[in-house]
Image (cartoon, rainbow, N blue to C red; front, top):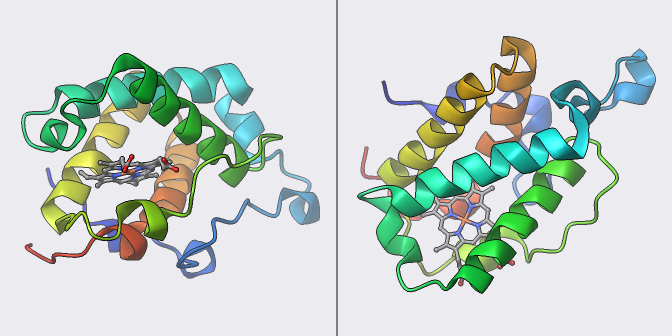
Length: 152
Ligand code: HEM
């Protein structure tokens, strides 16, 4: 089933170029990062998700020729991004989503494939629906910075 990202993007989180961590301090609720299980859980999720991307018959081509060192860098940057964006203690070590993806001509259909891989990973790790939706909303908020070709 195709994931329509805009359905995930709840207004408050849809900030085009800056990811925002949930304001847990105000509500007393633990951060999304803590509810996901902290760094080891984030790390395992990103490892599984990245492996799916690299193996994918369509979007895998985007990563063709990337050596293991670059792949590890990609995984680490994504771990730090997810950690920081969910309220964890990490520092973002990647360039902005716009800087990194502009010019690659990434299609909406590719974004949907990538999103579906993340959904599959979150399901595999049995992430509860609330946390699942919150993380997908954060990732979905990056869509305008990444997609250049609306093909679906
Ligand atoms: C779904 C949300 C996405 C997130 C959170 C994300 C995150 C990232 C991050 C953190 C980097 C590393 C940036 C850096 O080197 O500073 C990156 C690079 C990259 N992303 Fe994405 N990405 C997303 C979607 C996509 C999609 C849909 C594609 C295409 C299918 C894609 C293709 C790439 C490629 C090819 C690179 C390497 C660019 C380079 O090193 O020059 N990304 N992404």
